[in-house]
Length: 272
Image (tube, rainbow, N blue to C red):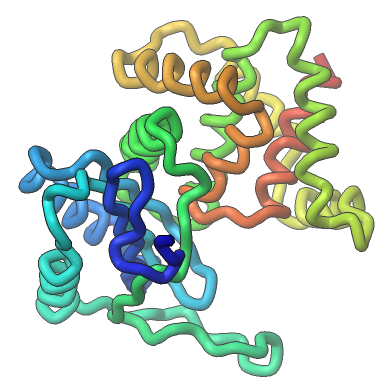
C-alpha cells in the first residue's frame, strides 16, 4: 500500500508529487511564472501541474504534479529544477516571525520540502477546475499577490460561482455553506470572530457596491466563460462549500477568511 509520505504518491495509475517551495510572498509571481514554464516544457509528460499559495509555517508555494506511472520517477528532475531556481533567484523574506505568539518556527526561506501537504481532491474534475481557477485568478491580480488582492480575487470568484446557481437556490446555499464552514469554529462564536474581521478590515458599503458590479457584469471573456463552465461542473459534482474552500485554499486564505467572504456575500444578498 502506498504511504502518504511516499514519493511519488500513486493513485489510479498516476504518480503524484507534492513539493513545497518556501519563497517570500513578495516574489510569488516570479516563482509562479517559473512553475508555468516548467510545466509547459514538460506538457507531454504531465497530467496536471497545480499551484497553491500558503503562508502556513512560512511563506511558500505548493506544487502538485501528476503524470502516468509509466513515465518513471521524476523526483530528482523536479527537485534539481527548483533547487537551481532558488540558487539563481533567492528571495528575501521581509515578514518577521512573531516570536512569543507562535510555538513552532517557520521552515527556512528558499528551501524545498516534499510531501507536507495534499491537494483537496485528486480527481480529474478537481484538477481541471484548480488549474483553470488559479490561472484565471493570476490574470485578475496582475502579479500583485498582496493579501488584500488575493482576498479580492477570492471574493470575485466565489461571487461568480454563486451566480452559476439558480437564483431560487442561492439563499439556501449561502446559509448551508455558512453553517458547514462554521464547523471548524464550533468551540467559539464564529459570528463574533467574522464580525470582528469584517469590522477591522472591510468597508461593507464598498463591498456591496463591488458585488453589484460583479452581478451586473455582462461582457465575459473567453477565459471567464471557460472558468464558469468548470465551476458549474465542480459545484454540481460536489457542493458550493467545497467550491468556496477550494478557491480560498489555492489562493492561500485560511478558514476564517473563507467564512468572512461567504458572510460578506450573504450580507449583500440579504440587502437586495
